[in-house]
Image 1 (cartoon, rainbow, N blue to C red):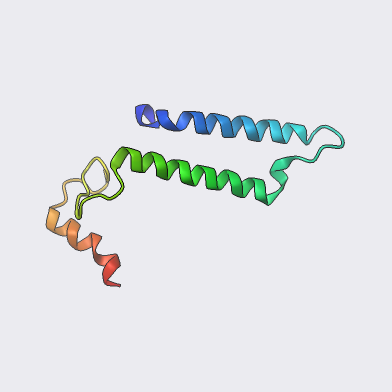
Image 2 (image 1 turned 30 degrees about the vertical axis):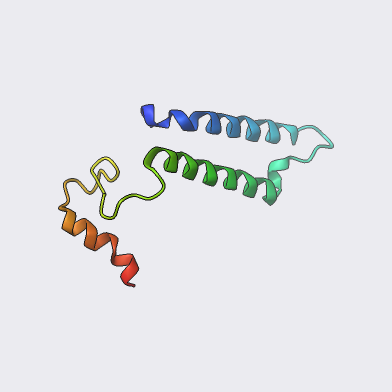
Length: 95
């Protein structure tokens, strides 16, 4: 991820520590590991989903202008002519 992954480090580290401590607590007799409950897993997934979308919106803006797929946003696209990008990006709306 390099320098672009820096905003995600606190989230990844805190989730890793949470999962580690939660699973280790299950080794203590009489304790039930919180990560064994689907609600805990769902809560972690919602936090990650919201955080990644929030950081993405913060970095790229809420709405990209129509037809602005660049090599930076889509390395696999390369140098695609803008007319091709517009026709491909509107394909989902045509269905």
